[in-house]
Image 1 (cartoon, rainbow, N blue to C red):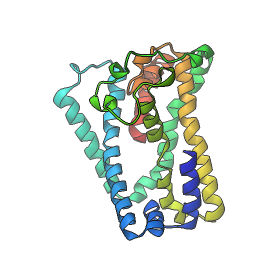
Image 2 (cartoon, helix red, strand yellow):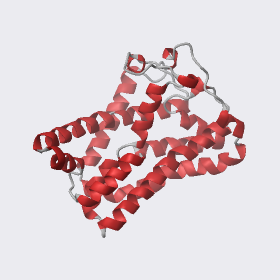
Image 3 (tube, helix red, strand yellow):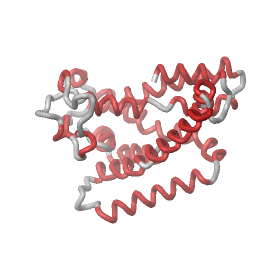
Length: 257
């Protein structure tokens, strides 16, 4: 996050262009590389956004206690497809509506996690933060798809029982995309001062927004390592504050995604 935030703060202030990274690459390497950057950014956005309806369904299934027999097949596929269509229609209405709602969405999305941190603070057992990962035999049994365990340049299992390849991949996925803020540098008053300050505040909020709820979730519950799957924070919220808080976390995941 830090290198990407620094790059965005510097280049966003220098190039006040809505195309952001495309303009930066084009200035440095020419029109061909700029066009390629824009195309790859579009492909990345289209594929990445396809993840979120599925992740939301995982949250719902985790809290409701559904398995593949209860909620699978065409029911699951139809729910994901319907969510995707609704989100696409919302974005199609225009950037102004989406932009004006961003601040409200941020407040609503963070509220359940703030409540979870407050309610779970007195339940924290600090020793749980320092428990070392259980070292699996080969790591493959922790995943339900071949992609995570496919051969790659980095070994799946490395030091300390940590699966470094998927771990680093998840860190990158959750903490990147600061370059997207480069598209709004031209909308900022006194861009040379206000814009870098905003990027820095966003960086701090991003890191704390992930770290603090996870510290409470890990410290206040005694789930095993294999229990931490997609959507598990919803189940953690139920344990800490009840079903209403679990529902709030699911709703938060829904609107933020």
